[in-house]
Length: 429
Figure 1 (tube, rainbow, N blue to C red):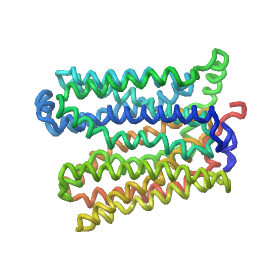
Figure 2 (cartoon, helix red, strand yellow):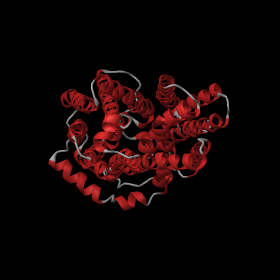
Figure 3 (cartoon, helix red, strand yellow):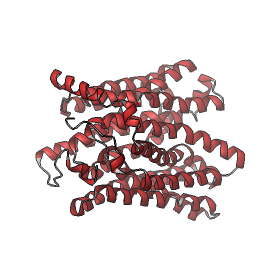
């Protein structure tokens, strides 16, 4: 398998036709769905700072850590099953069912009075949200030529990156305006509105009985163990873990770093956090589009994607410069630059690891496997950062570990992401 792997799939046309506008409109809807998912994912972080919420469930610091982590337990466990589901039954209906489940479960947190109920609802939210990434990338793979997927993924990632940027402030505003119970009820129920345009506009891609039988037969020929036998798949797992370790650090510990170590007020902390996540979102969109244009002009999709991915990891390594400086303004500069620079990696890494190098019939399952690494990063980064901070009293050690993971990610892209090592599917698939 060489760079020509991307010659299958939808045509790589750059012209905007009626059909292409519809595709981009549905992609925008998927981006909004990802934004809603992140709002329902991170609103708990604002509630955990509120005294009435902590008193209601009698939460210790250990309990708060538990509440933050349980989402990723079920999220990780259900990645592979959700990937199989969208490969087997299409994207539209599994996504709609899971979307409704997590919105209702998130809203029901506002009705809980016992800790076990709170934990149960978070587990349900995590399990249902596990469909988001496999379904979204399966849809992108089916509707965009891989050579044009960088811009598509970058556009989709606007929702995924702006979700954390606005989720916590929105939850805090709703808590201050009403209370924590109404915050969960409002954010959960309001999200259900998304289902109306999705059900009306998304194509019904549930296979016919004949196609379903054919897909089932081909699925048997490509078991999970055969997918995991590919060195390239393990390379993508390492790259995804390294990338997401940094991003989950930013989602969970950046506010504490800016307030406790850099002395910012809560207002300024929110501003600089927004700058960083806005930066990575916009750079992801621009770099995905730029790489697409280079591929269309010169070919070599794997080569160009790798150049952008490695460049993003290298620029993100400047996070350590921010940690080592004593000057607040310099630290803030590198804080924004490092996360924004990682945007060069964002869309192009996803296009490379989840679309360009992966055969279309197994995109959902592979993305499910890859997102286990993402969930693992989400569980490990906050815990290890807290332990290193407790042991050293400084954010230098946690950021030095981030630096090491970023270097590992870049090296893995160069050594393991080789097209000839991608999983092979039967020719008739």
